[in-house]
Length: 242
Image 1 (cartoon, rainbow, N blue to C red):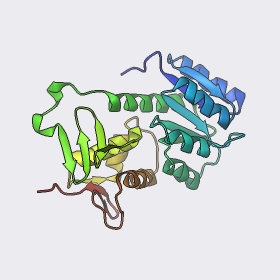
Image 2 (image 1 turned 120 degrees about the vertical axis):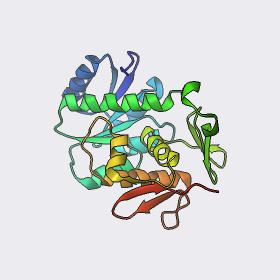
Image 3 (image 1 turned 135 degrees about the vertical axis):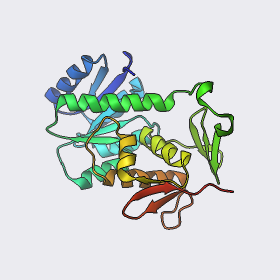
Image 4 (image 1 turned 90 degrees about the vertical axis):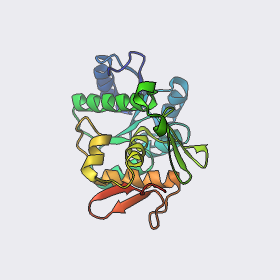
């Protein structure tokens, strides 16, 4: 699936040369860029352009990238990728824990960055696509477990009949687990589902996404209703209810 011409990416980066370099590579892929050189400007442009993806530097003036990410997550599940010169796991986990979908450390390869951006755009597009009737089995139009319900046709999750606002990665993760209750997924299997483009990410990323997902579905990790940890191996969704 190719990225559509009207796709807009918001680049929040205070280094003008870096921002223009990224924008030129995206332009070669028919992706439109809007550039903000500080955090407050990034939020203003987000409201104005409703971008399909946000590329966010952590060390922004006026309002840092972590706070910008938190603000965006209150109103949107658009994919967010962090750019960071602080290449250590604490920053990465913190960023993903507040709702980011991916990160890339500086200095970076522009081609690798564009490949990751396109992978996230494709995933977001697929997550919002409506499945055709031929792909659906009547008995699988809805998948429910307790208060959690997945409308397969409309591709929506709800908890106690209240729609859940999930990031594209959280959606893919919950869908994967919920569609095969009882099956244990190894961490690398889930990573392959979330990052089909072969991006290099640490296993810890899965734990961060699971933790964020548990918060949204009200799952107590000490006594889970939905997502169970299989120590040293991975995760599984609760066994089917009878």
